[in-house]
Length: 130
Image (tube, rainbow, N blue to C red; front, side, top):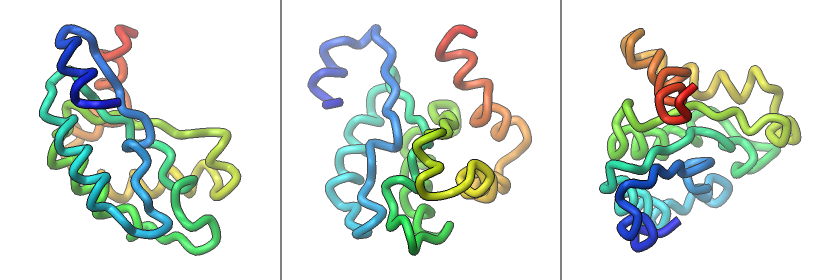
């Protein structure tokens, strides 16, 4: 998804899936970060926190590998424009469902209960009109 596309449709809601696939495996985030910062400027774009482990080194990832990118999307989108996504069943190639969830559970555990509820369910409910 490009900023040009989004700018042409200001009334259309968009969701970035899998954090726009940062290169966790090689830990090269400059291009990803520039792109995510640009697209986050549009208030009609949300970001789904999903697909983390499938973009990492499948055999050698740790929770800490994801912190920088989670920090960036949290900063630029804010808690009101983030939502959880599991990437199940694809993520099972790399980790159990519980292990995948634990990454984001640990990260967002420092947030208020209200903000955690937004991330885990309320933002998706609002976005998808559920």
